[in-house]
Length: 403
Image (cartoon, rainbow, N blue to C red; front, side, top):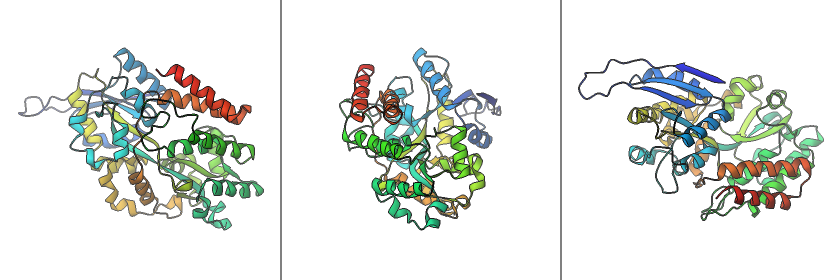
């Protein structure tokens, strides 16, 4: 998918004292940020802005090539949290430390840290967050007499809930891989990264990953998941048809559920913290300026506009992109009840999670390690490979591919 649109309005500012000539900028990203930019660019008349939108994977593949070759990237690029560490450490982004300094304290600390390189400089600026949550079907929770706080007390109580639901023919979750992902992403030891310690040594054979794999395997072996891959038509149908009782994800899933995936299920959903009281981020996006841009000051004008308090609020309203700007959390809209969630004031929960997440330092090998760990998990769940064997093999490959 290549959604290319010219959304800018040329401004005749040449000749005015103290003003900068309007520049033609290109913003490279992925949906649903085209909807956000279409809604907000009317308030940004300083420069012409053209959008080049590709699907999530294609956008990041293209950007990786652009950074490696030194050409072809937009003036401002959107980067998913899972890619930001490797892209920053490739050295292709402009150092934004001084420009971002006046705003830094107004943004979630952990997200600011994720946008920094190994040298502590700021190369990517957070634009939205993904507080990790559990969405659950209220008709399979409160309406059946369960207390959600008891269900999420720890991971064992969560699995016990799934075992009881199975007796009624209800699945706990669409796919067991989300359980493992939540556990290894949100139980990071202080001082470590997701997959590497402070010295760059892989952590993937340690107890965090061992436990993550064990939990997912229990879900799969006991028939508590539907083995339904995320972002497939079957997964969407599972939400609409009530085939599973919970989904571990980012707060942003609300926008997808109520806007297009399962709007007819309004009132059947609630949202809670993740099991065992863990806090973490599930997704999130960053803005960066490639060094190859010929309009770096104008590009910063656009970044500065997109991280402003008003536009951060607009992103929340337009595409349910949870603001990275923490000053927005006092806005009255956070107290609003959400009809889709049976009147729950869910934004207060999202804000509380966002403010309690601890920083996790990205590593340039994160993308490679995540891919290899996903493959290892699939081998355990689908092919019967022993957990210890799968983790040892993954560590060996990570050491070989990450230098």
